[in-house]
Amino acid sequence: MSNYKKVLVAIDGSDESDTIVNKAVEIAGANGAELHAVLVFEPLLGSYSFELNMADFETVQKEHQARIADNVRTSMAGLGVPATHIHFLAGKPATEIKKLVADSATDLLVIGSHGHNPIRAVLGSTANAVLHGIGCDVLIVRV
Image (cartoon, rainbow, N blue to C red; front, side, top):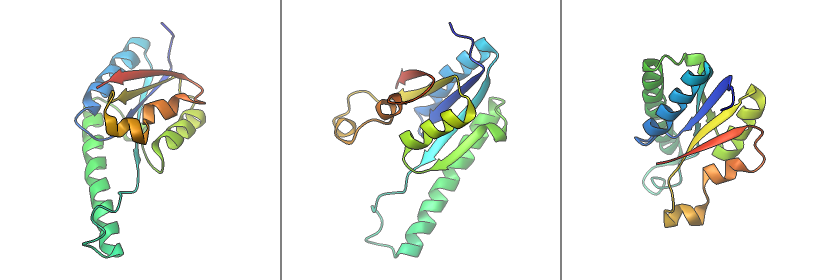
């Protein structure tokens, strides 16, 4: 096993994130590594836009992101992860995760994969996209 110094876990705020975080906690603990978490917010698709004007839509999106961020902060604090080790980014998840890995000297990225869901197969997988061109080890946890 490698001696990891910095482990980054990519989460999406779903219930399945707990499985991924638990694996990252286990690996970070076994290596005495710093644990960091990243959640990348993608703009919400126009699912509400037909009912709301643009200002209302932006408000709904910000409130949704704030709720998720609060939940992530609370759960990570319960694991002893300092707030400075929780990264909230905006954009395309694969792109933003790869940038953070490169900028932060991450040794291991732990990320989840949802398997062979037909919709995800068509749209592509963040885990798969992250694998191409990343400069650290990657552990994909099947959820």
